[in-house]
Each structure stands twice: as C-alpha cells, then as structure tokens.
Length: 249
Image 1 (cartoon, rainbow, N blue to C red):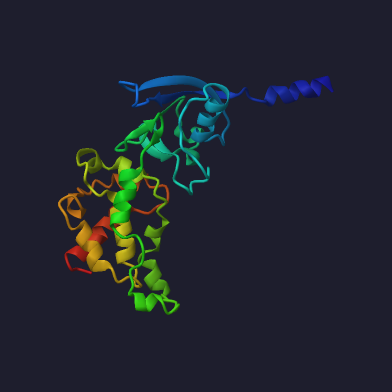
Image 2: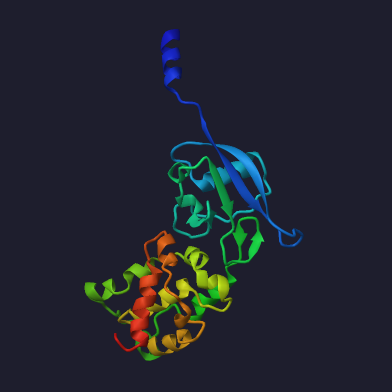
C-alpha cells in the first residue's frame, strides 16, 4: 500500500503558480496608481477572476473589483488583462501563456478604485440612442404581437447579444481622444434597433448619431470587434449603420 501511495504521489504535479500584479489606485487620495504583487496558485480551469478573488479571500481583502455572474453574461468584470480588454471570468490563466498576469482598470473609463470603473458615460450614450422599439401608442395598446420572419430576425440578432461590458469602448482609440464620442457600444446598439423591422424610430435615432462626435467620428480601427466576448462585431454594425445614413439601405 505504501508503494502504491508513493507511485500516485510521483504522478501528481506540484501546484503551479503565477505572479498576479493588481493595479491599486484610489482617486480620492492617491496621486498615481501602483501595483501590488501576489503569488497565486492555479489549475488549468482557474480564471483571472478566480485568482483575484483568491487574493481578496486570503491575502488582501481591500482589493476592489466588480463581478457578478461569473459566466460571461453580466459584463461586470471587464478589465485590462496583460494590456488587453477582457472579461476576467471568461479568461483562463492557462490560456494567457504567461507566468505574470497584470490586471488594470479598463481604459477610457474613470476609476472608482483599483479595478472598478464608472460606467456613466457608457450608459448615458446607450440611453441616448433609444435602446427600445419605437412604435405608435395606438399600436402598442392593442396587445398585438409584431411577428417577424427568420430573415428579419437575422438582420439584427447578432447585435442583440451585447452585454454592455464596455470592452469595445475600452479598446476604441477614438474614445481615448474624444471625451464626447458616443462610442462603439452605443453605435452598434443603434444599428440593432434601426435594423429591426418592428421599429419605427429610425429617423429620430439616426439624428442622434449624425454628429461630429457621433458615427462620423469613428475611424474604423476595428479594435472594438476584436475584443467583444459575445461576437457582436460593433465595427460591422457601425459600417452597416453608415449605409442607412447615406441612404444605401
């Protein structure tokens, strides 16, 4: 029996560890951000969020991080991970292929503290494009269903998958240089409703984004689509939306 235990132990690999560097910054009293470093064990299934919560539980309770569902649905845990906007709950440490993981708050968002940022700008822009179906009151009061064909649904359904995580805005170079730019998230959602055959608010919605800080400010870098965790492809939505603006659709 002792020999069997020794053989089993020989095949169990020692716990792997990574160096987790967490940005620490409180704008109320810190002049600049610093990094706190922690050695954290991980398995092949361990996510970056798991590692951060391991630090909060055992090493430093004061680390500020926003999260909720832990299954890439709520969009709460967006942050910069090794320089790229990602969802921490959707990013496995083993997939990063690095012995050092650096986590920072998302670019283009004001920092609340450490890894938590303010979403006011994103939500204000989202609200500005009227993210709901616009119909006449007389139509909606009847209780009638507005049916669509599969082809009509296909026109916008991809863009309905947005979880408002903010990663696209964090990756957008125009967001970094224009504080009033509406942003790729709002523009993609404007297309989602403009392309919906049930909606009658196209003209009013297009007027909102027909601005020097609206759709025409996008330089089409495409970085927004590269980081989207749900495959929404905001860059394509913006280009399709321009088709409506120019009268091609």
